[in-house]
Length: 461
Image (cartoon, rainbow, N blue to C red):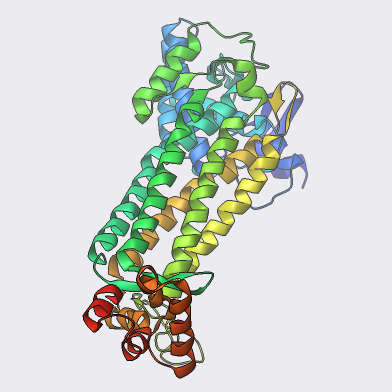
């Protein structure tokens, strides 16, 4: 297509490397277009939560720069209005750079800078694009570098999602598990160790263990928040703070805290905050531990509910949908299965984060887009899975009390309660006789009169 036929489809945008044709309707500019042209299309874009966090930072940066008399009121207010629109999701389709890009995330930072400058110019002049009166670097990015603003956006997005989504979801699941622990407190069941019958316990005991796992998971993720809420903003290129006003990071971070309800603070050491991403690795580790807990809980529930006639069947899981395209009447534990798959994805994300977290070569980690994608995905997945498990499975779980009691009566492990009274060896002999004869421990103990019958019944429950 020649230049004349391009007219009406593209506009020309300038940058330090020359002129670039950009789609006429696009709010982004030349550097974004160069990134689109340079990187392959994986089908994965940086998370919307990251884009919205960047817009939030730019909003408060414009406000701070206006307060510091570094940007005039008209430009600052236009940037803030544009940033508010981005935070509201109005321009999500304008963030077109692929996830797999420059490791600093510079292309995504510039994508945001250009969209905000373009929209601010449109608000001020009626024409989108360009670099005047609002410039993407000189105004929108003033006081910032991709090297400090991208890790800041990652921390902000993750901390907000944990506070607004994951913490409430885990609390919700904890509440449902606690309700079941209470409801099942008097329902005796056989315990199992090594996949073999063990001594009796209650179904409530099992659910109290699940409840505590989620409680500890909440404690772990919240324990990571003080490091995650440290922000690199103010370090600019390498952590030294070159070309930024000394009051700039404090003003912006205060604004972020007010708006989000999460208390952010400036990094204690800007060189660490940009060269390493240990807080992200730590947070992901806590997320992985929660995922491991969910696998344990989901697997136990589906095994306790297995059957319904030829498995354990101590739990009755809610029947949500047909389980087979060939076997009529089959119903599967679809919610626990979905939760397990989510947990495995989170574990895989953590492995990626562990590897990416090591990529802090000298003064900058160069896997920031990948870290953001995996961490934010893990937070969202766990929040969704926790609510799914609570609402579609735990809340409607029922116990088959008769089956639980029948298993206890058939168990050879019941003999353990007699050991203090008749000794280990004699108790073992009773168990062997019960097994060989297909009898219950209770019956054999009474037949051999090892203790008075009323004492046997009291000890065996």
